[in-house]
Amino acid sequence: MKWIGERISFVDDKKRTTIVIYPENVGWQKALMGAWFFMWLTIGATMFWSLTLKLTEQEKIIVFVFLVFWGYYAIRVGRAFLWMMFGKEKLKIDETALTLKNTIKDYGKATPYFIENIKKVRIQQPKENSIQAVWESSFWIRGGERLEFDYLGKTIRFGRKLEEKEVKLLFNLITKRIEEQLKGKKY
Image (tube, rainbow, N blue to C red; front, side, top):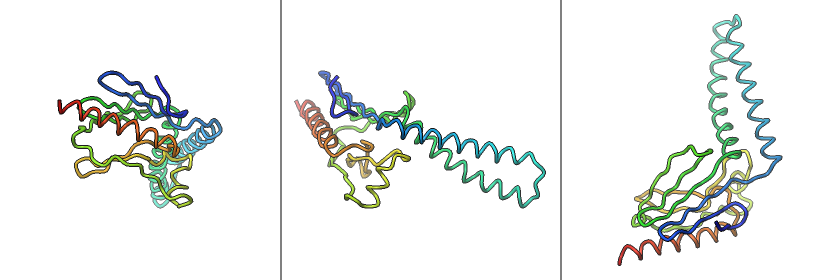
């Protein structure tokens, strides 16, 4: 196993390359995110408990509307927290496809993209000090993907919160392996 920076590992076999991208590992961010998530769950439990009280019809409507918004953000915050704790992006390049899988632990769906249909692999870096750059670098979201390619009219993105140096090295590795696989098919 070889490493690109601190967050990207890869294994080169004769017929395939496997790449794993880990999320940022900052202890205080994990602790803060965990506290936020569990406080959010406590708020939701309190609101569900309040439904057992004698409420007027109008109060019940307010609680239900609140719980709808609460549920949406509970899912968003929970997914971001679980990603931070246990997430990985797994890429596999073999003779037929580049397969992407976003996992939490080992749970996730692998999606193959056939190599002959992949066009224009490129780096997508937001402008420095832009709102997009600040938002994507904030630790409470899963982050912006830094690499992308066109596939049958769709743009597929991956490589969450990678540093510029890591992105360039990963870009070189992926494009080189895709070209090698395409050349191997033509013989």
